[in-house]
Structure formats: C-alpha cells, structure tokens
Length: 376
Image 1: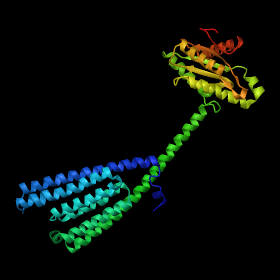
Image 2 (image 1 turned 90 degrees about the horizontal axis):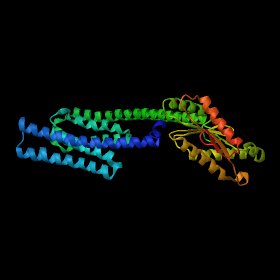
Image 3 (image 1 turned 90 degrees about the vertical axis):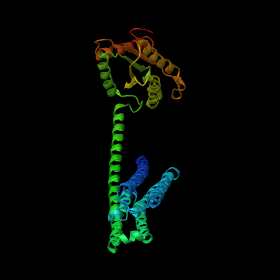
Image 4 (image 1 turned 30 degrees about the vertical axis):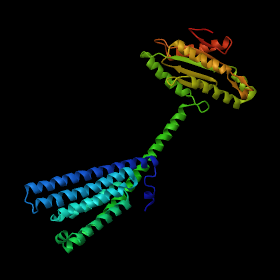
C-alpha cells in the first residue's frame, strides 16, 4: 500500500468525523434492508394475488412469503443489534446480512436471469467505507453465497448454464478489482483533500498568530501603539453615532529611577506586572494597550463616567499595595488622567486633554487619578 494510504485519516479530528459518517452509512444500509424486505414482500404478494402464479396458496404463504421474510428480517435485526452492541463488527455484519438477503431474493426469483447481478451491489456498496479488507470480505461472501445457491438449489442450477456460471463468477472477480481501484483512488483523493485542509488550517493559524503578534506588545501582551490608534479611530466613529467612551492614560511613577537602580530587566518585570493588573481589572469590552515606554492607554466602553473613574481608581489602588520581590518588596504607583468623550470632540483634542490630566496627577503628587470631573 502506498505511503498515502498508510497515512489515511491520520488527522484525529478528521478520522473521528469519518468514523461517525461511516456508522451513519451502516444505519442507512440497515434501513435500506428493511425497505427492500418490505418491498419484496409486497411485490410477491401482489404477484400472487393479481398475476398468474404457479403455486398453491399454502405453499406461497409459507415458503414464498412467510419463511423467507422471517429469515431476511432475522439477519437484518441481527445486523441492527450488532450495530448497538458491537459497533466494530457492524461493517461486516451488514454485508453478511446483505448476502443472505440477496441469496433469498435470487432463490425466489431465479427465473429472472439477471437476478444474480444483485450480488454485485454489495461489492460496490462496500466502497463507501474505503476499506479494502471489507470489500474483499464482501466479495468472498458473494462468491460463497452464489456457489452455495448453485450447489444447494437444484432449480436455480437449472436456470444457470455453464457459461452463466463462469461469467457470473468472473464478474464478481472483476467487480472486486474495480471496487479496489475505486477505494485506492478514493483514498488518495481523500488524503490529498485532508492534506490540503490541514495545510490551509495551519496557514490560517500562522496568519492569526502573526496578526496577533503584530497587534500586541511582546512584553506586556497588551495591544501595541499602532493597534491602540486603530481601536481609537473605531471608538471615535461609534461615539459619533451615539456610543460614547472614556479615555484613560496611565503612567508608572518614577519608572526611570527603577531602571537606573535595579536595571532594565527588573523594569521590564514591573511593566509586565502592571499590565497584568490592568488586564485583569478591565471588562472584555474595554481595550488596554501599552502606548509607549511606561505609559498605558485604556479605552473604556459601556459604562458611566463614574464607573470608569472607579475602575481606574481600583487599578491605581491595587498597584499601590502590590509589592514586587525584584524591588526588594516595594510597590510601584501610577498616575492616571481620565477624560470622557463629548460630542464633536476630535481624537487629538480628547487625547491631549487626557494627557493634560495625567500631567496634572503627576504634578500634584503622583499616585492618583485626575479627571475634569473629579480632582484628587
């Protein structure tokens, strides 16, 4: 078998989906058998009642209608039971049941010369499962079933000439070979499709990762400067349509002295810690970004100004009491400026006013939140 076939359905999720589909095929086969049995029952009854039929009523109802129908129902019910109790054998059971049903139909309709071709159908039907061993098993069943009919049923044998016997067996073999080629070709096609889908999924994942990396700051995992302005532009558009927001600028106090005293590695650790606190406190609707250096910018949505102020104040208070082992157990503080959007305000003006409030918080003692509505 080719390397492609060895890797057939190698993707676990793809294989699980395919297995579920094949089990559904088994169910369809079983229900088809029930339909065939019912249709054959009605066709035989119609023929006896309305067409010339060379058999007594007693013989017909027992040996043509009742016994064969019970046998076909029995093997179909067995296949149905195996599907529920031993699913891994259900693929073999449905074709074994199909062989018995085909033998019964052929026995009861042996005067129709082409009726033996019914046994070709399970061979080609087995290709739905893309399993060579299942197709070979099914073909062997058909050959055994046909030979059994030929040996056991004298009347059937009388309808089959030597040429018919050789031709039918040859058709079984050729059909099995053709079905095998269909399976091998189908496997290659499905493998190529699976490979193409996997490659496409991998590409989408890589594109998503690259896009995410291009939008976020590697140190803090917050959005970067460029992403902030993209969200800022969108926020302005929605604000003009009646969905106002608030802009908060947060700056770490005395950050230069942290770098100078403890080094930039510790400074990076402090930045990451501050970013985590900010990210944990904002809602999923809010946007937090590292605007540059030790400064962060927040876009706060779906809340009143008082709620936004309380949120920024909670962030400031938590940072003020959070100690850092890298700073010998000290805490860092932040100052913030908070400004709410008002009608017809440009993005430049809004940012400048928030920045001015941040400067006011720094100038008046640091470790505080300043806003045009509340001054602390």
